[in-house]
Image (cartoon, rainbow, N blue to C red; front, side):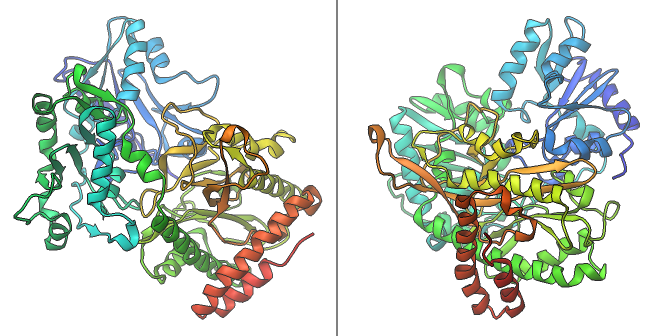
Amino acid sequence: MAAKSTTEILARLRNLMRRTSAGPIHAYIVPSGDAHQSEYIAPCDSRRSFITGFTGSAGTAVITMNEAALWTDGRYFLQAEQQIDTNWKLMKDGSVTTPSQGEWLSQVLEEGNCVGVDPYLMSVETWKPLSKLLKSNGLSLVPVMENLIDKVWDDRPFPPRNSLLVLTEAYTGKTWKTKIKEVREKLAEKKAGAQILTALDEIAWLFNLRGSDIEYNPVFFAYAVITMQDIYLFLDEGRLDNRVKKHLELNRSSIENGINITTKPYEDVKAFVGNLADEIKGKIWVSDKSSYGLVQNVPKTKRLMQPSPVSLMKAVKNSVEIEGMKRAHVKDAVTLCEFFSWLEKEVPKNSVTEVSAAEKLERIKQGQEDYVSLSFSTISSVGSNGAIIHYRPTPETDRHLNINEIYLCDSGAQYRDGTTDVTRTVHFGTPTAHEQECFTRVLKGHISLSTVIFPNGLKGHMLDSLARTSLWETGLDYLHGTGHGVGAFLNVHEGPCGIAQRISLQEVPLQEGMIVTDEPGYYEDGKFGVRIENCVLVIKAETKFNFKDKGFLTFEPITLVPIQTKMINPSLLTQKEIDWVNDYHAKCRDIVGAELKLQDKQEALEWLLRETETIG
């Protein structure tokens, strides 16, 4: 990964910082997200990547007149070190020695200095504490309405205008009308008069539409406002073809109990929200994950600042969505069985590279029914590249798979019936005892989390240590979360639930019907990486007792891909853990084996049968 030269770009940016619409600013913040605070973004919104050269999905750049710093988390430390040039200082977010952005700015700026940011690219939940911290140190956080990065980005791509996809109830389980009624019930409970939706996946889910404006994420650029009488959808109206108009019933002559949608141009949302308070009785509900710029258009006295109700509605899957997710994972398991059986034959020939392996896997996935796209860029990594947690193979970093090093493959797909995310770590030769121990300790953590029984009302962060305990016993750990929510043909990373060490104010208790990942790992810099990842469904647990009528929950794996037994040291497993592996592999045999037979994939079936033989 060659570092991008940023000297000239930074000089141009600093020149603009001296004469912004808000007056001279002494530091400029460049967040990773777009106006919807999306994790993954369209090329036209990749401003932080443009200014720094760092292409990871998470990070924030801060530029002063004399310095430039990049904050990112443990998933991207190695990647960032390779991609940023000497103009930049890497700030390892999460390290006890790393100051926050506000702390660092308070150290390097002088009292009375101003810090600028595009207010539509920073959420309210980020703006408020940062502004408070800066103010306590004599600094000011000011909105800069023109985006300075756009002014120095000469060849910035145009925003996408891709067509939309309509989903029927066979995939969604509910009509958009039913969902609107449920949103209005939530509004009534809060005595609110309107709901502003800014998160793209929430809008796509609510209206049973999907798009392709952001790679791997089936969403489209839009805002929505729901009142007790009306529904407003702000988007590029040029993409409203006849199928979408029919789905949204835009040509209807009669009005059905307030279930009528008015479409407006995407850019009209700012002025519309600014006028909303005069027309609506009660509070206007808006998430503090929404942009500071948009929220400022709602008078403070009229705001109900709480997580969007759609966020939780979307996270708790209905029975149709659950069955769809299970179908998608069976199809995905078929592709991975075919892929790994192919690798087993080809790798010893020294004919497969990280890039060609990822391309082969994508071609295999494309053959499955209802396949739409990948759900993220495949992490195809061998040896030392596997230690880069979110490594993406490129022609510059591409290496041959071989029989001497571990291969880590993290892949996922978007099918119309569900989203998948699975990681498997394999060896095509003979793993060392150390590699086996690391793998087995990761597996022990995976099983511990997968089999836990916990009471209703528990949040995911309270389970995180279960996945790490076996690693901690020998002084090992990993620098990423243990699990994230997964959308139903939506974003592969979905809130508001998850499993991580960090406690989030937005985190909600795990509930029956949620789907999260179980993905502990271990990464040895310069040598190898190990990760074992399944998607798991939160289900009711049958317990002998029921303390205080709480009700108890557990996890059901819906990913059904063999875990390589060659990498396991059985002496480190308890009998209960051995039984779990054998039972899991029996389920893979039964369910995926039947589908492989149905699709007449004999070689993949033979591979599956070999890889699921019992251990013990």
